[in-house]
Length: 344
Image 1 (cartoon, rainbow, N blue to C red):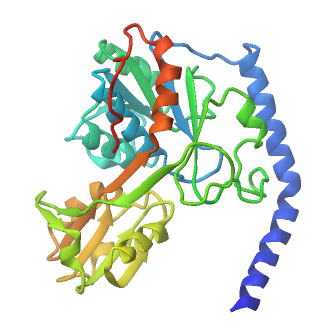
Image 2 (image 1 turned 135 degrees about the vertical axis):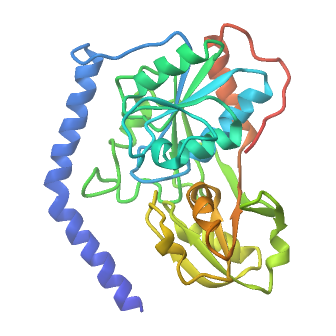
Image 3 (image 1 turned 120 degrees about the horizontal axis):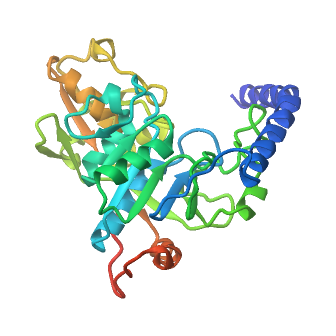
Protein backbone atom coordinates (compact mmCIF):
# COMPACT_ATOMS: atom_id res chain seq x y z
CA UNK A 1 0.00 0.00 0.00
CA UNK A 2 2.80 2.40 0.93
CA UNK A 3 4.61 1.74 -2.36
CA UNK A 4 1.40 2.31 -4.30
CA UNK A 5 0.89 5.68 -2.64
CA UNK A 6 4.49 6.65 -3.29
CA UNK A 7 4.12 5.78 -6.98
CA UNK A 8 0.89 7.78 -7.18
CA UNK A 9 2.52 10.87 -5.68
CA UNK A 10 5.52 10.47 -7.98
CA UNK A 11 3.24 10.25 -11.01
CA UNK A 12 1.39 13.37 -9.92
CA UNK A 13 4.69 15.19 -9.45
CA UNK A 14 5.87 14.34 -12.95
CA UNK A 15 2.51 15.37 -14.40
CA UNK A 16 2.69 18.72 -12.62
CA UNK A 17 6.17 19.30 -14.01
CA UNK A 18 4.98 18.56 -17.54
CA UNK A 19 2.11 21.00 -17.12
CA UNK A 20 4.28 23.72 -15.57
CA UNK A 21 4.75 25.67 -18.86
CA UNK A 22 0.98 25.80 -19.31
CA UNK A 23 0.65 27.06 -15.74
CA UNK A 24 3.09 29.86 -16.56
CA UNK A 25 0.99 30.87 -19.56
CA UNK A 26 -2.14 30.72 -17.43
CA UNK A 27 -0.49 33.01 -14.87
CA UNK A 28 0.40 35.54 -17.57
CA UNK A 29 -3.19 35.48 -18.83
CA UNK A 30 -4.53 36.03 -15.30
CA UNK A 31 -2.21 38.99 -14.78
CA UNK A 32 -3.04 40.52 -18.17
CA UNK A 33 -6.76 40.20 -17.53
CA UNK A 34 -6.44 41.97 -14.16
CA UNK A 35 -4.42 44.76 -15.76
CA UNK A 36 -7.02 45.30 -18.49
CA UNK A 37 -9.77 45.69 -15.90
CA UNK A 38 -7.64 47.84 -13.59
CA UNK A 39 -6.88 50.36 -16.32
CA UNK A 40 -10.37 50.45 -17.79
CA UNK A 41 -9.73 48.58 -21.04
CA UNK A 42 -12.36 46.07 -19.93
CA UNK A 43 -15.64 47.33 -18.49
CA UNK A 44 -16.16 46.95 -14.76
CA UNK A 45 -19.47 47.95 -13.21
CA UNK A 46 -20.17 49.37 -9.75
CA UNK A 47 -23.62 49.25 -8.15
CA UNK A 48 -25.34 51.40 -5.56
CA UNK A 49 -25.33 48.70 -2.88
CA UNK A 50 -22.35 47.03 -1.19
CA UNK A 51 -21.31 43.85 -3.00
CA UNK A 52 -19.79 40.95 -1.03
CA UNK A 53 -18.05 38.30 -3.12
CA UNK A 54 -17.49 34.85 -1.62
CA UNK A 55 -15.14 32.81 -3.77
CA UNK A 56 -12.18 30.50 -4.14
CA UNK A 57 -8.56 30.99 -5.04
CA UNK A 58 -8.32 27.20 -5.29
CA UNK A 59 -10.29 25.31 -7.93
CA UNK A 60 -13.21 23.17 -6.82
CA UNK A 61 -15.64 23.45 -3.97
CA UNK A 62 -14.26 24.57 -0.61
CA UNK A 63 -17.40 25.63 1.25
CA UNK A 64 -18.56 28.80 -0.52
CA UNK A 65 -22.27 28.03 -0.46
CA UNK A 66 -22.50 27.26 3.28
CA UNK A 67 -20.70 30.54 3.95
CA UNK A 68 -23.07 32.47 1.66
CA UNK A 69 -26.00 31.00 3.58
CA UNK A 70 -24.37 31.87 6.91
CA UNK A 71 -23.72 35.47 5.81
CA UNK A 72 -27.26 35.92 4.53
CA UNK A 73 -28.74 34.63 7.79
CA UNK A 74 -26.32 36.79 9.77
CA UNK A 75 -27.47 39.92 7.93
CA UNK A 76 -31.12 38.93 8.13
CA UNK A 77 -30.78 38.56 11.89
CA UNK A 78 -29.79 42.25 11.93
CA UNK A 79 -32.78 43.24 9.81
CA UNK A 80 -30.58 43.95 6.77
CA UNK A 81 -32.30 43.21 3.48
CA UNK A 82 -29.93 41.01 1.50
CA UNK A 83 -30.06 39.41 -1.95
CA UNK A 84 -27.88 36.80 -3.63
CA UNK A 85 -26.56 36.51 -7.17
CA UNK A 86 -24.94 33.53 -8.83
CA UNK A 87 -23.97 32.22 -12.21
CA UNK A 88 -25.96 29.07 -11.46
CA UNK A 89 -23.28 26.57 -12.37
CA UNK A 90 -24.64 23.51 -14.19
CA UNK A 91 -28.02 24.96 -15.15
CA UNK A 92 -29.35 24.32 -18.62
CA UNK A 93 -30.67 27.79 -19.48
CA UNK A 94 -28.89 31.06 -20.13
CA UNK A 95 -31.67 33.51 -19.20
CA UNK A 96 -31.45 35.81 -16.20
CA UNK A 97 -34.09 34.54 -13.77
CA UNK A 98 -35.18 34.82 -10.16
CA UNK A 99 -34.92 31.54 -8.29
CA UNK A 100 -38.06 30.61 -6.38
CA UNK A 101 -39.27 27.43 -4.72
CA UNK A 102 -41.07 26.60 -7.97
CA UNK A 103 -38.04 27.05 -10.25
CA UNK A 104 -36.86 23.75 -11.77
CA UNK A 105 -33.36 22.83 -10.65
CA UNK A 106 -32.29 22.51 -14.27
CA UNK A 107 -33.00 26.22 -14.72
CA UNK A 108 -31.54 27.50 -11.44
CA UNK A 109 -28.64 25.21 -10.61
CA UNK A 110 -28.41 23.26 -7.37
CA UNK A 111 -26.56 25.80 -5.21
CA UNK A 112 -28.82 28.81 -5.94
CA UNK A 113 -31.82 26.61 -5.19
CA UNK A 114 -30.31 25.52 -1.88
CA UNK A 115 -29.50 29.14 -0.92
CA UNK A 116 -33.04 30.28 -1.71
CA UNK A 117 -34.64 27.43 0.25
CA UNK A 118 -32.32 27.88 3.23
CA UNK A 119 -32.68 31.67 3.52
CA UNK A 120 -35.83 32.74 1.59
CA UNK A 121 -33.70 35.65 0.32
CA UNK A 122 -34.18 36.83 -3.27
CA UNK A 123 -31.76 34.93 -5.51
CA UNK A 124 -31.02 35.73 -9.16
CA UNK A 125 -28.91 33.75 -11.62
CA UNK A 126 -27.43 34.82 -14.94
CA UNK A 127 -24.38 34.00 -17.04
CA UNK A 128 -23.12 37.50 -16.24
CA UNK A 129 -23.29 38.34 -12.56
CA UNK A 130 -23.68 42.03 -13.35
CA UNK A 131 -26.88 41.20 -15.22
CA UNK A 132 -28.11 39.16 -12.25
CA UNK A 133 -27.45 42.06 -9.88
CA UNK A 134 -29.25 44.59 -12.09
CA UNK A 135 -32.28 42.29 -12.20
CA UNK A 136 -32.14 41.70 -8.44
CA UNK A 137 -32.11 45.42 -7.61
CA UNK A 138 -34.84 46.17 -10.14
CA UNK A 139 -37.15 43.51 -8.69
CA UNK A 140 -36.18 44.12 -5.04
CA UNK A 141 -35.18 47.79 -4.63
CA UNK A 142 -35.11 47.47 -0.82
CA UNK A 143 -32.07 45.15 -0.98
CA UNK A 144 -29.25 46.84 0.94
CA UNK A 145 -26.47 44.25 0.46
CA UNK A 146 -25.75 41.85 -2.40
CA UNK A 147 -23.83 38.63 -1.79
CA UNK A 148 -22.24 36.99 -4.81
CA UNK A 149 -21.86 33.20 -4.64
CA UNK A 150 -18.50 32.63 -6.35
CA UNK A 151 -17.06 35.22 -8.71
CA UNK A 152 -13.79 36.18 -7.06
CA UNK A 153 -12.26 36.26 -10.56
CA UNK A 154 -15.28 38.00 -12.15
CA UNK A 155 -13.74 41.46 -12.37
CA UNK A 156 -16.61 42.88 -14.46
CA UNK A 157 -18.42 43.18 -11.13
CA UNK A 158 -16.83 45.64 -8.75
CA UNK A 159 -16.98 44.55 -5.14
CA UNK A 160 -16.67 46.09 -1.70
CA UNK A 161 -15.68 43.00 0.30
CA UNK A 162 -13.80 39.94 -0.98
CA UNK A 163 -13.83 36.70 0.99
CA UNK A 164 -11.77 33.65 0.00
CA UNK A 165 -12.68 30.21 1.30
CA UNK A 166 -10.17 27.39 1.77
CA UNK A 167 -10.65 23.78 2.83
CA UNK A 168 -8.04 21.34 4.11
CA UNK A 169 -6.34 21.23 0.71
CA UNK A 170 -4.89 24.66 1.45
CA UNK A 171 -3.16 25.77 -1.75
CA UNK A 172 -2.16 22.25 -2.76
CA UNK A 173 1.26 22.22 -4.43
CA UNK A 174 1.11 26.01 -4.74
CA UNK A 175 1.09 25.97 -8.55
CA UNK A 176 -1.41 27.54 -10.90
CA UNK A 177 -3.78 25.59 -13.12
CA UNK A 178 -3.34 23.14 -14.76
CA UNK A 179 -0.14 22.10 -12.92
CA UNK A 180 -1.77 22.83 -9.56
CA UNK A 181 -5.12 23.83 -8.09
CA UNK A 182 -4.69 27.63 -7.94
CA UNK A 183 -6.80 30.00 -10.01
CA UNK A 184 -4.57 32.92 -8.97
CA UNK A 185 -1.08 33.22 -7.48
CA UNK A 186 -0.94 32.77 -3.70
CA UNK A 187 -0.01 34.46 -1.38
CA UNK A 188 0.19 37.39 -3.82
CA UNK A 189 -3.60 37.42 -4.21
CA UNK A 190 -3.99 37.92 -0.47
CA UNK A 191 -2.48 41.40 -0.79
CA UNK A 192 -4.48 42.40 -3.87
CA UNK A 193 -7.81 43.44 -2.38
CA UNK A 194 -8.72 40.26 -0.52
CA UNK A 195 -10.34 41.23 2.77
CA UNK A 196 -11.08 38.01 4.66
CA UNK A 197 -9.87 34.41 4.56
CA UNK A 198 -12.02 31.68 6.07
CA UNK A 199 -10.95 28.06 6.53
CA UNK A 200 -13.77 25.51 6.36
CA UNK A 201 -11.65 22.46 7.17
CA UNK A 202 -10.20 21.16 10.40
CA UNK A 203 -6.53 21.78 9.60
CA UNK A 204 -5.88 25.31 8.24
CA UNK A 205 -2.70 25.49 6.20
CA UNK A 206 -2.07 29.18 6.97
CA UNK A 207 -3.55 32.13 8.83
CA UNK A 208 -7.19 33.16 8.60
CA UNK A 209 -10.48 32.75 10.39
CA UNK A 210 -11.78 29.29 11.20
CA UNK A 211 -15.17 27.62 11.20
CA UNK A 212 -16.82 24.42 12.37
CA UNK A 213 -18.86 21.96 10.34
CA UNK A 214 -21.06 19.23 11.70
CA UNK A 215 -24.13 17.31 10.65
CA UNK A 216 -27.47 18.34 12.11
CA UNK A 217 -29.02 16.06 14.71
CA UNK A 218 -32.00 15.46 12.44
CA UNK A 219 -32.35 14.53 8.80
CA UNK A 220 -35.55 15.12 6.85
CA UNK A 221 -37.39 13.18 4.18
CA UNK A 222 -39.19 14.05 0.97
CA UNK A 223 -42.29 14.99 2.96
CA UNK A 224 -40.29 17.23 5.29
CA UNK A 225 -40.72 15.02 8.34
CA UNK A 226 -37.67 14.96 10.64
CA UNK A 227 -35.78 11.77 11.44
CA UNK A 228 -33.29 11.73 14.32
CA UNK A 229 -29.85 10.79 13.03
CA UNK A 230 -29.24 8.79 16.19
CA UNK A 231 -32.22 6.57 15.34
CA UNK A 232 -30.34 5.32 12.27
CA UNK A 233 -27.47 3.91 14.30
CA UNK A 234 -27.22 0.14 13.95
CA UNK A 235 -29.21 0.17 10.70
CA UNK A 236 -27.53 -0.46 7.34
CA UNK A 237 -27.74 2.73 5.27
CA UNK A 238 -26.48 3.92 1.91
CA UNK A 239 -24.85 7.33 1.59
CA UNK A 240 -24.85 9.22 -1.72
CA UNK A 241 -23.10 12.51 -2.46
CA UNK A 242 -22.47 14.54 -5.62
CA UNK A 243 -20.38 17.28 -4.01
CA UNK A 244 -16.78 18.46 -4.19
CA UNK A 245 -15.65 16.17 -1.36
CA UNK A 246 -18.04 13.22 -0.89
CA UNK A 247 -15.64 11.48 1.48
CA UNK A 248 -16.02 14.31 3.98
CA UNK A 249 -19.78 13.70 4.09
CA UNK A 250 -19.29 9.95 4.47
CA UNK A 251 -16.77 10.48 7.25
CA UNK A 252 -19.12 12.77 9.16
CA UNK A 253 -21.86 10.15 8.96
CA UNK A 254 -19.52 7.48 10.29
CA UNK A 255 -18.42 9.81 13.08
CA UNK A 256 -22.06 9.99 14.15
CA UNK A 257 -22.11 6.23 14.59
CA UNK A 258 -23.82 5.27 11.32
CA UNK A 259 -22.95 2.06 9.47
CA UNK A 260 -22.60 2.68 5.75
CA UNK A 261 -23.24 -0.48 3.79
CA UNK A 262 -22.59 1.49 0.62
CA UNK A 263 -21.10 4.91 -0.14
CA UNK A 264 -21.77 6.32 -3.61
CA UNK A 265 -19.38 9.15 -4.49
CA UNK A 266 -20.33 11.20 -7.55
CA UNK A 267 -18.84 14.31 -9.22
CA UNK A 268 -19.72 17.78 -7.93
CA UNK A 269 -22.98 19.10 -9.43
CA UNK A 270 -23.82 15.58 -10.64
CA UNK A 271 -26.94 15.42 -12.81
CA UNK A 272 -28.94 12.79 -10.96
CA UNK A 273 -31.31 10.53 -12.87
CA UNK A 274 -33.47 7.48 -12.17
CA UNK A 275 -30.42 5.32 -12.90
CA UNK A 276 -28.70 6.62 -9.77
CA UNK A 277 -31.52 5.28 -7.60
CA UNK A 278 -31.99 2.02 -9.48
CA UNK A 279 -31.26 -0.94 -7.25
CA UNK A 280 -31.82 1.02 -4.03
CA UNK A 281 -35.45 -0.01 -3.54
CA UNK A 282 -36.30 -0.56 0.11
CA UNK A 283 -33.07 1.00 1.36
CA UNK A 284 -32.47 4.00 3.57
CA UNK A 285 -30.41 6.49 1.56
CA UNK A 286 -28.73 9.56 3.06
CA UNK A 287 -27.69 12.55 0.97
CA UNK A 288 -26.61 16.17 1.43
CA UNK A 289 -29.06 19.06 1.24
CA UNK A 290 -27.39 20.19 -1.97
CA UNK A 291 -28.08 16.82 -3.59
CA UNK A 292 -31.57 16.63 -2.12
CA UNK A 293 -32.84 19.47 -4.32
CA UNK A 294 -32.24 17.13 -7.28
CA UNK A 295 -32.89 13.76 -5.66
CA UNK A 296 -36.18 14.40 -3.87
CA UNK A 297 -38.23 14.76 -7.09
CA UNK A 298 -36.77 11.46 -8.32
CA UNK A 299 -37.29 9.64 -5.04
CA UNK A 300 -41.07 10.15 -5.12
CA UNK A 301 -41.32 7.47 -7.82
CA UNK A 302 -38.97 5.03 -6.07
CA UNK A 303 -39.80 2.97 -3.00
CA UNK A 304 -36.94 3.98 -0.74
CA UNK A 305 -36.39 6.16 2.30
CA UNK A 306 -34.38 9.14 1.10
CA UNK A 307 -33.17 11.48 3.84
CA UNK A 308 -31.29 14.75 3.50
CA UNK A 309 -28.81 15.53 6.27
CA UNK A 310 -28.30 19.29 6.79
CA UNK A 311 -24.86 20.70 7.45
CA UNK A 312 -24.50 23.03 10.42
CA UNK A 313 -21.80 25.47 9.38
CA UNK A 314 -20.52 28.03 11.90
CA UNK A 315 -17.78 30.58 11.20
CA UNK A 316 -16.07 31.75 14.38
CA UNK A 317 -17.59 34.89 15.97
CA UNK A 318 -14.41 36.87 15.21
CA UNK A 319 -15.07 36.37 11.49
CA UNK A 320 -18.53 37.97 11.73
CA UNK A 321 -17.10 40.80 13.83
CA UNK A 322 -14.46 41.50 11.17
CA UNK A 323 -17.09 41.28 8.43
CA UNK A 324 -19.38 43.74 10.23
CA UNK A 325 -16.49 46.17 10.68
CA UNK A 326 -15.83 46.11 6.94
CA UNK A 327 -19.49 46.36 5.94
CA UNK A 328 -20.76 49.02 8.39
CA UNK A 329 -19.16 52.07 6.67
CA UNK A 330 -20.65 50.97 3.35
CA UNK A 331 -24.26 50.72 4.54
CA UNK A 332 -26.73 53.59 4.29
CA UNK A 333 -28.18 52.53 7.66
CA UNK A 334 -25.91 51.50 10.56
CA UNK A 335 -25.81 47.96 11.86
CA UNK A 336 -27.24 47.42 15.37
CA UNK A 337 -24.64 48.15 18.03
CA UNK A 338 -25.33 44.84 19.74
CA UNK A 339 -26.38 41.68 17.98
CA UNK A 340 -25.87 37.95 17.99
CA UNK A 341 -24.05 36.12 15.22
CA UNK A 342 -26.37 33.92 13.18
CA UNK A 343 -25.00 30.67 11.83
CA UNK A 344 -26.37 28.34 9.19
